[in-house]
Length: 128
Image (tube, rainbow, N blue to C red; front, side, top):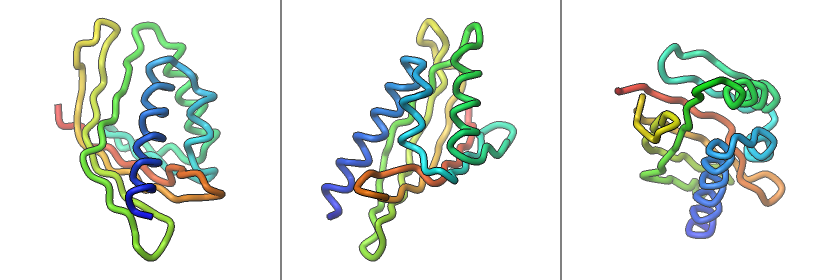
């Protein structure tokens, strides 16, 4: 299960990155668990629930000069006893010209529900 789970999670992360790049909040929703939690990197704001996150993404996508965030997984740990996994990686916030404005590290907890991997929690650390 480990190799197929890793491929599936990496594919879901790529889809999430594409949705951010394309400003497609509707595509983000299915990648998030209903009761997911995100802790932002700079101010540690807690954004709870799928609908709460989709609302924040819609607002972000509508903003003039919005940033595009890219999450790059560096390591995935797949649980051998439960349908859960932990993703560790780096993130970048890019401006409209593609220049890096902010960056850092992140961790994301995934769970397989109904045959799909969804994000239950993400926590970000701003380093630059």
